[in-house]
Length: 173
Image 1 (cartoon, rainbow, N blue to C red):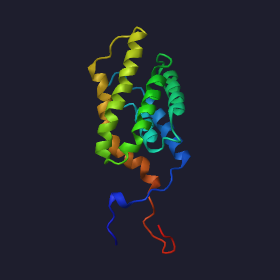
Image 2 (image 1 turned 180 degrees about the horizontal axis):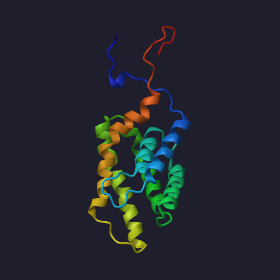
Image 3 (image 1 turned 135 degrees about the vertical axis):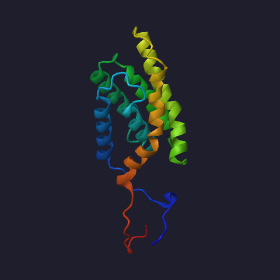
Image 4 (image 1 turned 90 degrees about the horizontal axis):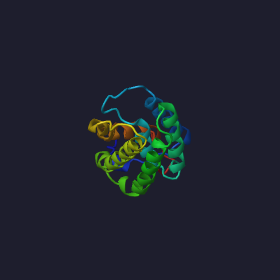
């Protein structure tokens, strides 16, 4: 049995249905009422950032805008609040994609953290402009918990793409 290291694995192409399924599951998780519980990650932003980094040609700002509007409608938020934040997040994540993929998941999380914080900051600014109160500094704990979940999320979302363990001697790869 040959030892396998992470860098020698070849991933299968991503299936578009799996990308959409993961985004729909993230949207469902976002709709779970958590109240003002600090540290609950924005699942849509996290999964959207992941796919914008991994598949920037398949998931981009258009997807981010539609998901943002769906979150705004589902949460009863100011219309466009999440859409604006997610579009900026998608743009920045797609811009980071070529660089971030060279790093380990821990280092990727450190690169994604400022993007998630900026998205949250934009949402707070839109809320403040709409006349709401400042939610408190604990509101930003969600970005840190999302960054902590980056490695398990990476493992989970890439699981269907790993090559099978059994090798066919007739295939070169």
